[in-house]
Image (cartoon, rainbow, N blue to C red; front, side, top):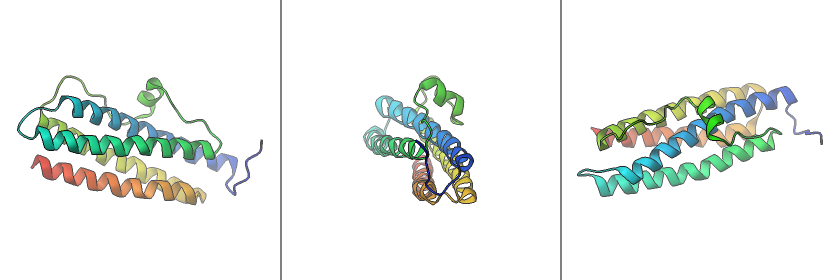
Amino acid sequence: MTINIGISQEDRKKSAEALSKLLADTYTLYLKTHGYHWNVEGPHFQSLHIQFMDQYTEMWTAVDELAERIRALGHYAPGSYKAFAQLSSIAEEEGQPDWQHMVRNLSDGHEQVARTAREVLRIAESVGDDATADVVTPRITLHEKTAWMLRATAA
């Protein structure tokens, strides 16, 4: 079936490919955050355990919205660990870091997701994809704020 939403097929592909990278970054950061939630230890256990849960819960909702936007553009969303690993700019965790490294790693991860989202926004704006811009703009705000809060926690 033909898609006629006012964005060319080529431009929809550009948006979908950029969104796929953001989806992969978000999902990878979600997994890292969830693992940290399970394994955090130390004097700030309770507050970090709750903070990490709030963060991974929010990202779990976000990955669905990002994937659905890719589908609305007429493309398939990546959905495997292999695809996410190939697309993501966030490194998987190795070993078991202490709580301070967890907080720093997550802060860095949120900054990376904000940078990726900003790239998606620029592409969306360049092709007139207002709906993608509307999905991505709040993601930038959220990830920048979360990175700041994590930096403040690690200080």
